[in-house]
Length: 586
Image (cartoon, rainbow, N blue to C red; front, side):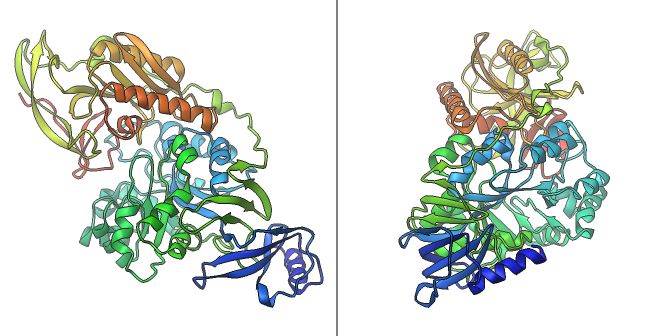
Protein backbone atom coordinates (compact mmCIF):
# COMPACT_ATOMS: atom_id res chain seq x y z
CA UNK A 1 0.00 0.00 0.00
CA UNK A 2 1.44 3.37 -1.00
CA UNK A 3 1.57 6.48 1.16
CA UNK A 4 -1.11 8.05 -1.04
CA UNK A 5 -3.38 5.03 -0.64
CA UNK A 6 -3.00 5.11 3.14
CA UNK A 7 -3.86 8.81 3.13
CA UNK A 8 -7.08 8.13 1.17
CA UNK A 9 -8.11 5.28 3.47
CA UNK A 10 -7.66 7.46 6.54
CA UNK A 11 -9.98 10.07 5.03
CA UNK A 12 -12.64 7.46 4.31
CA UNK A 13 -12.32 5.94 7.78
CA UNK A 14 -12.73 9.39 9.34
CA UNK A 15 -15.79 10.15 7.19
CA UNK A 16 -14.31 13.07 5.26
CA UNK A 17 -14.22 11.10 1.99
CA UNK A 18 -16.90 8.82 0.60
CA UNK A 19 -16.44 5.04 0.65
CA UNK A 20 -16.84 3.36 -2.72
CA UNK A 21 -18.96 0.57 -1.15
CA UNK A 22 -20.76 -0.08 2.10
CA UNK A 23 -22.05 -3.50 3.10
CA UNK A 24 -24.89 -3.13 5.60
CA UNK A 25 -26.49 -5.51 8.10
CA UNK A 26 -23.81 -8.20 7.94
CA UNK A 27 -23.56 -10.99 10.46
CA UNK A 28 -19.81 -10.58 10.57
CA UNK A 29 -17.66 -13.61 11.34
CA UNK A 30 -14.66 -12.05 13.06
CA UNK A 31 -11.80 -14.53 12.70
CA UNK A 32 -9.61 -12.51 15.08
CA UNK A 33 -11.95 -12.49 18.08
CA UNK A 34 -14.00 -15.57 17.28
CA UNK A 35 -17.22 -13.54 17.50
CA UNK A 36 -20.23 -13.12 15.26
CA UNK A 37 -22.05 -9.79 15.43
CA UNK A 38 -24.06 -7.39 13.30
CA UNK A 39 -21.83 -4.88 11.56
CA UNK A 40 -21.51 -2.46 8.66
CA UNK A 41 -18.37 -2.59 6.52
CA UNK A 42 -16.93 0.36 4.62
CA UNK A 43 -14.74 -0.23 1.58
CA UNK A 44 -12.63 2.10 -0.53
CA UNK A 45 -11.61 0.65 -3.87
CA UNK A 46 -9.89 -2.67 -3.02
CA UNK A 47 -9.46 -2.09 0.74
CA UNK A 48 -11.64 -2.39 3.80
CA UNK A 49 -11.48 0.86 5.77
CA UNK A 50 -13.86 0.34 8.67
CA UNK A 51 -15.82 -2.39 10.40
CA UNK A 52 -18.46 -0.99 12.77
CA UNK A 53 -21.01 -2.60 15.03
CA UNK A 54 -24.38 -1.41 13.74
CA UNK A 55 -25.44 0.38 16.92
CA UNK A 56 -22.17 2.32 16.91
CA UNK A 57 -22.20 3.30 13.23
CA UNK A 58 -22.09 7.03 12.47
CA UNK A 59 -23.18 6.26 8.90
CA UNK A 60 -20.30 7.67 6.89
CA UNK A 61 -20.97 8.50 3.22
CA UNK A 62 -20.73 5.71 0.61
CA UNK A 63 -21.19 5.74 -3.17
CA UNK A 64 -22.93 2.37 -3.17
CA UNK A 65 -24.71 0.38 -0.46
CA UNK A 66 -25.46 -3.36 -0.46
CA UNK A 67 -27.77 -4.59 2.28
CA UNK A 68 -27.12 -8.29 2.88
CA UNK A 69 -30.00 -8.54 5.38
CA UNK A 70 -28.30 -10.36 8.24
CA UNK A 71 -26.58 -12.92 6.03
CA UNK A 72 -23.11 -13.99 7.15
CA UNK A 73 -20.06 -12.12 5.90
CA UNK A 74 -16.77 -14.05 5.94
CA UNK A 75 -13.31 -13.49 4.43
CA UNK A 76 -12.63 -14.90 0.96
CA UNK A 77 -11.57 -18.53 1.15
CA UNK A 78 -7.92 -19.56 0.71
CA UNK A 79 -6.92 -23.00 -0.56
CA UNK A 80 -3.70 -23.81 1.30
CA UNK A 81 -2.54 -26.60 -1.01
CA UNK A 82 -3.57 -27.77 -4.46
CA UNK A 83 -2.41 -28.74 -7.91
CA UNK A 84 -4.41 -26.99 -10.64
CA UNK A 85 -3.19 -29.65 -13.06
CA UNK A 86 -5.30 -32.29 -11.29
CA UNK A 87 -8.42 -30.47 -12.47
CA UNK A 88 -7.00 -30.74 -16.02
CA UNK A 89 -8.10 -27.11 -16.44
CA UNK A 90 -5.95 -24.18 -17.45
CA UNK A 91 -5.45 -21.61 -14.66
CA UNK A 92 -8.00 -19.27 -16.27
CA UNK A 93 -10.70 -21.94 -16.71
CA UNK A 94 -9.93 -23.12 -13.17
CA UNK A 95 -10.62 -19.57 -11.93
CA UNK A 96 -13.98 -19.56 -13.72
CA UNK A 97 -14.96 -22.71 -11.83
CA UNK A 98 -13.81 -21.89 -8.30
CA UNK A 99 -14.53 -18.18 -7.91
CA UNK A 100 -18.33 -18.63 -7.67
CA UNK A 101 -17.68 -21.21 -4.93
CA UNK A 102 -15.94 -18.54 -2.81
CA UNK A 103 -12.28 -19.31 -3.46
CA UNK A 104 -10.48 -15.98 -3.85
CA UNK A 105 -6.90 -17.10 -3.17
CA UNK A 106 -4.97 -20.29 -3.87
CA UNK A 107 -1.44 -21.49 -3.18
CA UNK A 108 -0.64 -23.98 -5.94
CA UNK A 109 2.30 -26.31 -6.39
CA UNK A 110 2.80 -26.82 -10.17
CA UNK A 111 5.09 -29.82 -9.78
CA UNK A 112 2.93 -31.88 -12.14
CA UNK A 113 3.50 -29.67 -15.17
CA UNK A 114 7.11 -28.92 -14.17
CA UNK A 115 7.88 -32.65 -14.08
CA UNK A 116 6.70 -32.74 -17.70
CA UNK A 117 8.17 -29.58 -19.21
CA UNK A 118 10.50 -28.12 -16.59
CA UNK A 119 10.86 -24.37 -16.09
CA UNK A 120 8.43 -23.71 -18.94
CA UNK A 121 5.75 -25.26 -16.73
CA UNK A 122 5.92 -22.65 -13.99
CA UNK A 123 6.29 -19.89 -16.58
CA UNK A 124 3.13 -21.13 -18.29
CA UNK A 125 1.13 -21.27 -15.04
CA UNK A 126 2.17 -17.72 -14.16
CA UNK A 127 1.36 -16.38 -17.62
CA UNK A 128 -1.98 -18.20 -17.79
CA UNK A 129 -3.02 -16.80 -14.38
CA UNK A 130 -2.24 -13.12 -14.95
CA UNK A 131 -4.92 -10.47 -14.32
CA UNK A 132 -7.51 -12.87 -12.92
CA UNK A 133 -10.22 -11.87 -10.45
CA UNK A 134 -8.56 -14.00 -7.79
CA UNK A 135 -5.08 -14.47 -6.28
CA UNK A 136 -3.14 -17.38 -7.74
CA UNK A 137 0.14 -17.80 -5.85
CA UNK A 138 2.62 -20.53 -6.70
CA UNK A 139 5.41 -22.52 -5.10
CA UNK A 140 8.54 -23.74 -6.87
CA UNK A 141 8.47 -27.55 -7.09
CA UNK A 142 11.10 -29.15 -4.88
CA UNK A 143 11.03 -32.63 -6.37
CA UNK A 144 11.47 -32.68 -10.12
CA UNK A 145 11.73 -35.63 -10.46
CA UNK A 146 10.14 -36.78 -7.22
CA UNK A 147 13.14 -39.04 -6.44
CA UNK A 148 16.24 -38.89 -8.63
CA UNK A 149 17.22 -42.28 -10.04
CA UNK A 150 13.85 -43.93 -9.39
CA UNK A 151 12.04 -42.39 -12.36
CA UNK A 152 12.86 -40.39 -15.49
CA UNK A 153 10.71 -37.28 -15.79
CA UNK A 154 10.79 -34.52 -18.38
CA UNK A 155 13.10 -32.28 -16.35
CA UNK A 156 15.34 -32.13 -13.31
CA UNK A 157 15.44 -29.18 -10.91
CA UNK A 158 18.55 -28.60 -8.85
CA UNK A 159 19.13 -25.88 -6.26
CA UNK A 160 20.38 -23.42 -8.90
CA UNK A 161 17.20 -23.64 -10.97
CA UNK A 162 15.05 -23.42 -7.85
CA UNK A 163 17.03 -20.41 -6.60
CA UNK A 164 16.31 -18.58 -9.86
CA UNK A 165 12.60 -19.49 -9.91
CA UNK A 166 12.07 -18.40 -6.30
CA UNK A 167 12.68 -14.80 -7.39
CA UNK A 168 9.68 -14.70 -9.74
CA UNK A 169 6.58 -12.69 -8.85
CA UNK A 170 3.74 -14.51 -7.05
CA UNK A 171 6.15 -17.22 -5.88
CA UNK A 172 5.81 -17.80 -2.12
CA UNK A 173 8.37 -20.52 -1.52
CA UNK A 174 9.23 -24.18 -2.03
CA UNK A 175 6.58 -26.71 -3.04
CA UNK A 176 5.85 -29.93 -1.19
CA UNK A 177 9.08 -31.66 -0.27
CA UNK A 178 7.97 -35.15 -1.29
CA UNK A 179 11.31 -36.85 -0.86
CA UNK A 180 10.81 -37.07 2.90
CA UNK A 181 13.19 -40.02 3.05
CA UNK A 182 15.88 -37.84 1.48
CA UNK A 183 15.27 -35.12 4.07
CA UNK A 184 15.44 -37.54 7.00
CA UNK A 185 18.58 -39.18 5.62
CA UNK A 186 20.31 -35.86 4.93
CA UNK A 187 20.67 -36.45 1.20
CA UNK A 188 22.82 -33.71 -0.31
CA UNK A 189 20.31 -32.96 -3.06
CA UNK A 190 17.43 -32.33 -0.67
CA UNK A 191 19.63 -30.45 1.80
CA UNK A 192 20.77 -28.08 -0.95
CA UNK A 193 17.26 -27.58 -2.38
CA UNK A 194 15.66 -26.90 1.01
CA UNK A 195 18.49 -24.60 2.03
CA UNK A 196 17.97 -22.30 -0.96
CA UNK A 197 14.45 -21.46 0.21
CA UNK A 198 15.44 -21.54 3.88
CA UNK A 199 18.14 -18.91 3.41
CA UNK A 200 15.72 -16.68 1.51
CA UNK A 201 13.28 -17.03 4.45
CA UNK A 202 10.62 -18.37 2.11
CA UNK A 203 7.87 -20.88 2.78
CA UNK A 204 8.75 -24.59 2.94
CA UNK A 205 5.84 -26.87 2.15
CA UNK A 206 6.00 -30.45 3.40
CA UNK A 207 4.76 -33.92 2.51
CA UNK A 208 5.01 -36.48 5.30
CA UNK A 209 2.76 -39.54 4.72
CA UNK A 210 2.63 -42.17 7.45
CA UNK A 211 5.55 -40.77 9.47
CA UNK A 212 5.44 -39.85 13.13
CA UNK A 213 7.62 -39.96 16.22
CA UNK A 214 11.33 -39.35 15.76
CA UNK A 215 11.07 -39.51 11.94
CA UNK A 216 8.51 -36.70 11.97
CA UNK A 217 10.69 -34.65 14.31
CA UNK A 218 13.66 -35.22 12.01
CA UNK A 219 11.63 -34.11 8.99
CA UNK A 220 10.58 -30.91 10.77
CA UNK A 221 14.19 -30.25 11.76
CA UNK A 222 15.03 -30.57 8.09
CA UNK A 223 12.94 -27.51 7.26
CA UNK A 224 9.47 -28.34 5.85
CA UNK A 225 6.58 -27.08 7.97
CA UNK A 226 3.32 -28.49 6.57
CA UNK A 227 1.68 -31.75 5.52
CA UNK A 228 -1.41 -32.46 3.42
CA UNK A 229 -0.75 -36.22 3.46
CA UNK A 230 -2.25 -36.71 6.94
CA UNK A 231 -4.81 -39.50 6.71
CA UNK A 232 -5.76 -40.25 10.32
CA UNK A 233 -6.26 -38.58 13.67
CA UNK A 234 -3.25 -40.13 15.41
CA UNK A 235 -0.89 -38.60 12.87
CA UNK A 236 -2.80 -35.31 12.88
CA UNK A 237 -2.47 -34.86 16.64
CA UNK A 238 1.24 -35.77 16.56
CA UNK A 239 1.85 -33.21 13.81
CA UNK A 240 -0.19 -30.41 15.39
CA UNK A 241 1.47 -30.94 18.76
CA UNK A 242 4.88 -30.67 17.12
CA UNK A 243 3.97 -27.40 15.40
CA UNK A 244 3.53 -28.83 11.92
CA UNK A 245 0.71 -27.34 9.87
CA UNK A 246 -1.88 -29.99 9.01
CA UNK A 247 -3.51 -29.18 5.67
CA UNK A 248 -6.57 -31.39 6.09
CA UNK A 249 -7.51 -32.58 2.62
CA UNK A 250 -10.75 -33.23 0.76
CA UNK A 251 -9.79 -34.10 -2.81
CA UNK A 252 -11.40 -36.18 -5.54
CA UNK A 253 -9.16 -39.06 -4.45
CA UNK A 254 -8.45 -38.72 -0.72
CA UNK A 255 -11.06 -37.48 1.76
CA UNK A 256 -9.35 -36.98 5.11
CA UNK A 257 -11.07 -33.98 6.76
CA UNK A 258 -13.73 -35.96 8.64
CA UNK A 259 -11.25 -38.37 10.24
CA UNK A 260 -8.85 -35.58 11.19
CA UNK A 261 -11.52 -33.29 12.62
CA UNK A 262 -13.11 -36.04 14.69
CA UNK A 263 -9.74 -36.58 16.36
CA UNK A 264 -8.60 -32.99 16.89
CA UNK A 265 -11.86 -31.07 17.47
CA UNK A 266 -11.28 -30.96 21.23
CA UNK A 267 -7.94 -29.21 20.81
CA UNK A 268 -8.06 -25.55 21.78
CA UNK A 269 -8.26 -23.62 18.54
CA UNK A 270 -5.06 -24.84 16.80
CA UNK A 271 -3.53 -22.14 14.62
CA UNK A 272 -1.71 -24.79 12.56
CA UNK A 273 -4.79 -26.31 10.92
CA UNK A 274 -5.88 -25.48 7.38
CA UNK A 275 -8.21 -27.13 4.88
CA UNK A 276 -7.22 -27.83 1.28
CA UNK A 277 -8.47 -29.51 -1.92
CA UNK A 278 -5.14 -30.88 -3.25
CA UNK A 279 -6.45 -32.76 -6.34
CA UNK A 280 -10.06 -31.97 -7.27
CA UNK A 281 -11.70 -32.63 -10.63
CA UNK A 282 -14.07 -30.27 -12.50
CA UNK A 283 -17.29 -32.17 -11.81
CA UNK A 284 -16.56 -32.29 -8.08
CA UNK A 285 -15.92 -28.54 -8.09
CA UNK A 286 -19.12 -27.80 -9.99
CA UNK A 287 -21.34 -30.24 -8.08
CA UNK A 288 -19.92 -30.23 -4.53
CA UNK A 289 -17.89 -27.03 -4.40
CA UNK A 290 -14.31 -26.16 -3.76
CA UNK A 291 -12.93 -24.81 -0.46
CA UNK A 292 -16.52 -24.15 0.66
CA UNK A 293 -17.05 -27.90 0.49
CA UNK A 294 -14.03 -28.46 2.74
CA UNK A 295 -15.55 -26.07 5.30
CA UNK A 296 -18.91 -27.84 5.10
CA UNK A 297 -17.31 -31.26 5.65
CA UNK A 298 -15.29 -29.98 8.62
CA UNK A 299 -18.39 -28.48 10.27
CA UNK A 300 -20.39 -31.67 9.68
CA UNK A 301 -17.56 -33.59 11.36
CA UNK A 302 -17.87 -31.44 14.48
CA UNK A 303 -15.44 -28.55 13.99
CA UNK A 304 -16.75 -25.25 15.33
CA UNK A 305 -17.89 -23.15 12.32
CA UNK A 306 -15.64 -20.22 13.22
CA UNK A 307 -12.65 -22.58 13.52
CA UNK A 308 -13.52 -24.11 10.15
CA UNK A 309 -13.66 -20.66 8.57
CA UNK A 310 -10.39 -19.67 10.23
CA UNK A 311 -8.81 -22.78 8.72
CA UNK A 312 -9.46 -21.41 5.21
CA UNK A 313 -8.89 -17.71 5.91
CA UNK A 314 -6.73 -16.33 8.71
CA UNK A 315 -4.74 -19.49 9.37
CA UNK A 316 -3.41 -20.02 5.82
CA UNK A 317 -2.93 -16.28 5.30
CA UNK A 318 -0.70 -16.01 8.36
CA UNK A 319 1.10 -19.28 7.66
CA UNK A 320 2.01 -18.17 4.13
CA UNK A 321 2.70 -14.57 5.12
CA UNK A 322 -0.11 -13.25 2.91
CA UNK A 323 -0.28 -9.79 4.38
CA UNK A 324 -3.74 -8.20 4.60
CA UNK A 325 -5.57 -11.36 3.49
CA UNK A 326 -7.70 -13.77 5.47
CA UNK A 327 -9.77 -11.36 7.60
CA UNK A 328 -12.33 -8.56 7.41
CA UNK A 329 -10.59 -5.65 9.11
CA UNK A 330 -9.35 -2.11 8.38
CA UNK A 331 -6.59 -1.95 5.71
CA UNK A 332 -7.23 -5.57 4.64
CA UNK A 333 -8.08 -6.41 1.05
CA UNK A 334 -11.83 -6.48 0.49
CA UNK A 335 -12.05 -10.19 -0.41
CA UNK A 336 -15.31 -11.28 1.21
CA UNK A 337 -18.13 -13.77 0.86
CA UNK A 338 -21.81 -13.60 1.74
CA UNK A 339 -23.04 -17.01 2.87
CA UNK A 340 -26.54 -18.06 3.90
CA UNK A 341 -25.76 -20.06 7.03
CA UNK A 342 -22.88 -21.61 8.97
CA UNK A 343 -23.77 -25.20 8.17
CA UNK A 344 -24.31 -25.47 4.42
CA UNK A 345 -21.82 -22.68 3.52
CA UNK A 346 -23.74 -21.77 0.38
CA UNK A 347 -21.91 -18.84 -1.21
CA UNK A 348 -24.34 -16.16 -2.40
CA UNK A 349 -21.93 -13.31 -3.21
CA UNK A 350 -18.19 -13.12 -3.85
CA UNK A 351 -16.25 -9.86 -3.52
CA UNK A 352 -12.66 -9.58 -4.71
CA UNK A 353 -10.69 -6.37 -4.22
CA UNK A 354 -13.92 -4.61 -3.35
CA UNK A 355 -15.79 -5.66 -6.51
CA UNK A 356 -18.77 -8.02 -6.65
CA UNK A 357 -17.47 -10.70 -9.03
CA UNK A 358 -19.87 -13.63 -8.52
CA UNK A 359 -23.41 -14.08 -7.30
CA UNK A 360 -25.60 -17.15 -6.77
CA UNK A 361 -23.02 -19.48 -8.38
CA UNK A 362 -22.65 -17.25 -11.44
CA UNK A 363 -19.48 -15.42 -12.46
CA UNK A 364 -20.14 -11.72 -13.11
CA UNK A 365 -16.77 -10.83 -14.61
CA UNK A 366 -15.30 -11.91 -17.92
CA UNK A 367 -12.11 -13.97 -17.81
CA UNK A 368 -10.11 -13.64 -20.99
CA UNK A 369 -8.48 -16.65 -22.63
CA UNK A 370 -4.87 -15.75 -23.41
CA UNK A 371 -3.01 -17.04 -26.45
CA UNK A 372 0.06 -18.95 -25.27
CA UNK A 373 2.33 -20.83 -27.68
CA UNK A 374 2.96 -23.68 -25.26
CA UNK A 375 -0.70 -24.68 -25.43
CA UNK A 376 -0.23 -26.02 -28.97
CA UNK A 377 3.07 -27.86 -28.36
CA UNK A 378 2.95 -31.70 -28.43
CA UNK A 379 5.17 -32.93 -25.57
CA UNK A 380 4.70 -36.68 -26.14
CA UNK A 381 7.94 -38.24 -27.43
CA UNK A 382 7.70 -42.03 -27.44
CA UNK A 383 9.92 -44.36 -29.45
CA UNK A 384 8.15 -46.34 -32.15
CA UNK A 385 5.87 -48.71 -30.25
CA UNK A 386 5.94 -52.48 -30.80
CA UNK A 387 3.76 -55.24 -29.41
CA UNK A 388 6.66 -56.76 -27.45
CA UNK A 389 7.01 -53.47 -25.51
CA UNK A 390 3.92 -54.50 -23.57
CA UNK A 391 4.92 -58.10 -22.78
CA UNK A 392 6.99 -59.57 -19.95
CA UNK A 393 9.72 -61.83 -21.26
CA UNK A 394 10.22 -64.97 -19.14
CA UNK A 395 13.39 -66.97 -18.51
CA UNK A 396 11.64 -70.13 -19.74
CA UNK A 397 9.69 -70.97 -22.88
CA UNK A 398 6.70 -72.72 -21.28
CA UNK A 399 5.51 -73.47 -17.76
CA UNK A 400 5.18 -71.41 -14.59
CA UNK A 401 7.36 -68.79 -12.90
CA UNK A 402 7.19 -66.68 -9.79
CA UNK A 403 7.16 -62.90 -10.30
CA UNK A 404 7.13 -59.89 -7.99
CA UNK A 405 4.27 -57.53 -8.73
CA UNK A 406 1.99 -54.98 -7.10
CA UNK A 407 -1.07 -55.73 -5.03
CA UNK A 408 -3.77 -53.22 -4.22
CA UNK A 409 -5.04 -54.23 -0.78
CA UNK A 410 -8.60 -53.98 -2.15
CA UNK A 411 -10.43 -52.88 -5.27
CA UNK A 412 -11.31 -49.60 -3.53
CA UNK A 413 -8.10 -48.87 -1.63
CA UNK A 414 -5.16 -46.91 -3.04
CA UNK A 415 -2.74 -48.75 -0.72
CA UNK A 416 -0.31 -50.95 -2.64
CA UNK A 417 2.03 -53.69 -1.43
CA UNK A 418 4.65 -56.01 -2.85
CA UNK A 419 3.40 -59.50 -3.64
CA UNK A 420 4.80 -62.62 -5.25
CA UNK A 421 2.59 -64.17 -7.96
CA UNK A 422 2.77 -67.49 -9.79
CA UNK A 423 2.05 -66.87 -13.47
CA UNK A 424 1.92 -69.00 -16.59
CA UNK A 425 4.45 -68.66 -19.39
CA UNK A 426 3.52 -69.21 -23.03
CA UNK A 427 5.92 -68.91 -25.97
CA UNK A 428 8.51 -67.27 -23.72
CA UNK A 429 6.22 -64.55 -22.29
CA UNK A 430 4.07 -64.17 -19.19
CA UNK A 431 0.48 -65.12 -20.02
CA UNK A 432 -2.37 -63.80 -17.81
CA UNK A 433 -5.22 -65.45 -19.71
CA UNK A 434 -7.80 -66.74 -17.22
CA UNK A 435 -6.22 -64.76 -14.39
CA UNK A 436 -7.66 -61.78 -12.48
CA UNK A 437 -4.26 -60.11 -12.70
CA UNK A 438 -3.57 -57.22 -15.07
CA UNK A 439 -0.45 -56.05 -16.80
CA UNK A 440 0.79 -52.56 -16.00
CA UNK A 441 3.41 -50.54 -17.85
CA UNK A 442 5.15 -47.26 -17.08
CA UNK A 443 6.76 -45.96 -20.27
CA UNK A 444 8.90 -42.85 -20.53
CA UNK A 445 7.25 -40.29 -22.77
CA UNK A 446 10.15 -37.81 -22.95
CA UNK A 447 12.21 -39.68 -25.52
CA UNK A 448 14.41 -41.58 -23.05
CA UNK A 449 13.24 -45.06 -24.09
CA UNK A 450 12.86 -46.49 -20.57
CA UNK A 451 9.92 -48.67 -19.60
CA UNK A 452 8.91 -51.37 -17.16
CA UNK A 453 6.08 -53.91 -17.29
CA UNK A 454 4.74 -55.70 -14.22
CA UNK A 455 1.59 -57.42 -13.00
CA UNK A 456 -0.96 -55.87 -10.67
CA UNK A 457 -3.71 -57.41 -8.54
CA UNK A 458 -7.05 -55.83 -7.57
CA UNK A 459 -6.73 -52.91 -9.96
CA UNK A 460 -9.00 -54.23 -11.78
CA UNK A 461 -9.87 -54.05 -15.50
CA UNK A 462 -11.57 -57.12 -16.91
CA UNK A 463 -10.73 -56.49 -20.59
CA UNK A 464 -9.08 -53.91 -22.79
CA UNK A 465 -6.61 -51.23 -21.71
CA UNK A 466 -6.73 -47.84 -20.00
CA UNK A 467 -3.87 -45.43 -20.68
CA UNK A 468 -2.97 -42.01 -19.29
CA UNK A 469 -0.17 -39.47 -19.41
CA UNK A 470 -1.48 -37.87 -16.21
CA UNK A 471 0.59 -40.17 -14.00
CA UNK A 472 1.83 -38.62 -10.76
CA UNK A 473 4.51 -37.33 -10.54
CA UNK A 474 6.60 -38.09 -13.61
CA UNK A 475 3.60 -38.04 -15.96
CA UNK A 476 5.04 -40.80 -18.03
CA UNK A 477 2.67 -43.03 -19.97
CA UNK A 478 0.90 -45.51 -17.68
CA UNK A 479 -1.26 -48.29 -19.11
CA UNK A 480 -3.20 -50.99 -17.24
CA UNK A 481 -4.35 -53.79 -19.51
CA UNK A 482 -5.37 -57.40 -20.08
CA UNK A 483 -4.26 -57.68 -23.70
CA UNK A 484 -0.90 -56.30 -24.96
CA UNK A 485 -2.48 -55.65 -28.37
CA UNK A 486 -4.99 -53.24 -26.78
CA UNK A 487 -2.16 -51.56 -24.88
CA UNK A 488 -0.33 -50.99 -28.17
CA UNK A 489 -3.40 -49.31 -29.70
CA UNK A 490 -3.86 -47.18 -26.57
CA UNK A 491 -0.22 -46.06 -26.59
CA UNK A 492 -0.37 -45.01 -30.24
CA UNK A 493 -3.61 -43.08 -29.68
CA UNK A 494 -2.10 -41.25 -26.69
CA UNK A 495 0.82 -40.15 -28.86
CA UNK A 496 -1.54 -39.04 -31.63
CA UNK A 497 -3.68 -36.78 -29.39
CA UNK A 498 -0.71 -35.25 -27.54
CA UNK A 499 -1.47 -36.92 -24.21
CA UNK A 500 -4.59 -37.61 -22.19
CA UNK A 501 -6.70 -40.61 -21.19
CA UNK A 502 -7.67 -43.43 -23.55
CA UNK A 503 -9.78 -46.58 -23.16
CA UNK A 504 -9.33 -49.35 -25.73
CA UNK A 505 -11.05 -52.73 -26.11
CA UNK A 506 -10.65 -55.37 -28.80
CA UNK A 507 -8.40 -53.07 -30.79
CA UNK A 508 -10.88 -50.18 -30.90
CA UNK A 509 -10.78 -46.86 -29.04
CA UNK A 510 -13.86 -46.81 -26.77
CA UNK A 511 -13.33 -43.37 -25.24
CA UNK A 512 -10.60 -40.73 -25.35
CA UNK A 513 -9.95 -37.42 -23.60
CA UNK A 514 -7.26 -35.23 -25.13
CA UNK A 515 -5.08 -33.33 -22.64
CA UNK A 516 -2.70 -31.72 -25.12
CA UNK A 517 -1.18 -29.02 -22.88
CA UNK A 518 1.90 -30.79 -21.44
CA UNK A 519 -0.08 -34.04 -21.66
CA UNK A 520 -2.23 -33.02 -18.68
CA UNK A 521 -4.37 -29.93 -19.35
CA UNK A 522 -7.35 -29.34 -21.62
CA UNK A 523 -8.45 -26.14 -23.35
CA UNK A 524 -12.05 -26.95 -22.44
CA UNK A 525 -13.91 -25.23 -19.62
CA UNK A 526 -15.01 -27.00 -16.44
CA UNK A 527 -18.50 -27.87 -17.66
CA UNK A 528 -17.32 -29.41 -20.94
CA UNK A 529 -14.34 -31.22 -19.46
CA UNK A 530 -16.35 -32.35 -16.44
CA UNK A 531 -18.75 -34.16 -18.77
CA UNK A 532 -15.88 -35.88 -20.56
CA UNK A 533 -14.25 -37.05 -17.32
CA UNK A 534 -17.60 -38.26 -15.92
CA UNK A 535 -18.26 -40.29 -19.06
CA UNK A 536 -14.76 -41.78 -18.94
CA UNK A 537 -15.19 -42.78 -15.29
CA UNK A 538 -18.56 -44.31 -16.14
CA UNK A 539 -17.00 -46.37 -18.93
CA UNK A 540 -14.10 -47.51 -16.74
CA UNK A 541 -16.53 -48.74 -14.10
CA UNK A 542 -18.22 -50.85 -16.77
CA UNK A 543 -14.83 -52.48 -17.33
CA UNK A 544 -14.58 -53.48 -13.67
CA UNK A 545 -12.74 -50.61 -11.96
CA UNK A 546 -14.89 -50.16 -8.86
CA UNK A 547 -12.92 -47.27 -7.35
CA UNK A 548 -14.79 -44.02 -6.62
CA UNK A 549 -12.56 -42.33 -9.20
CA UNK A 550 -11.22 -44.83 -11.76
CA UNK A 551 -9.20 -42.19 -13.66
CA UNK A 552 -7.38 -41.14 -10.49
CA UNK A 553 -6.69 -44.79 -9.61
CA UNK A 554 -4.83 -45.15 -12.90
CA UNK A 555 -2.95 -41.87 -12.34
CA UNK A 556 -1.53 -42.80 -8.93
CA UNK A 557 0.03 -46.21 -9.70
CA UNK A 558 3.32 -44.45 -10.47
CA UNK A 559 3.27 -42.10 -7.45
CA UNK A 560 6.60 -43.25 -6.04
CA UNK A 561 6.52 -41.05 -2.92
CA UNK A 562 3.47 -42.78 -1.42
CA UNK A 563 4.22 -46.08 0.36
CA UNK A 564 4.59 -48.93 -0.13
CA UNK A 565 5.17 -50.18 -3.69
CA UNK A 566 4.77 -48.25 -6.93
CA UNK A 567 5.71 -48.53 -10.61
CA UNK A 568 8.01 -46.26 -12.62
CA UNK A 569 9.68 -46.40 -16.01
CA UNK A 570 12.80 -47.89 -14.37
CA UNK A 571 11.06 -50.66 -12.41
CA UNK A 572 8.98 -51.57 -9.37
CA UNK A 573 9.85 -49.12 -6.62
CA UNK A 574 10.19 -49.85 -2.90
CA UNK A 575 9.11 -46.38 -1.75
CA UNK A 576 10.33 -46.54 1.86
CA UNK A 577 13.76 -47.97 1.05
CA UNK A 578 14.05 -46.00 -2.20
CA UNK A 579 15.24 -48.84 -4.38
CA UNK A 580 14.22 -50.79 -7.46
CA UNK A 581 12.92 -54.31 -6.81
CA UNK A 582 13.87 -57.23 -9.02
CA UNK A 583 10.72 -58.57 -10.65
CA UNK A 584 11.28 -62.14 -11.73
CA UNK A 585 12.31 -64.57 -9.00
CA UNK A 586 12.65 -67.73 -11.02
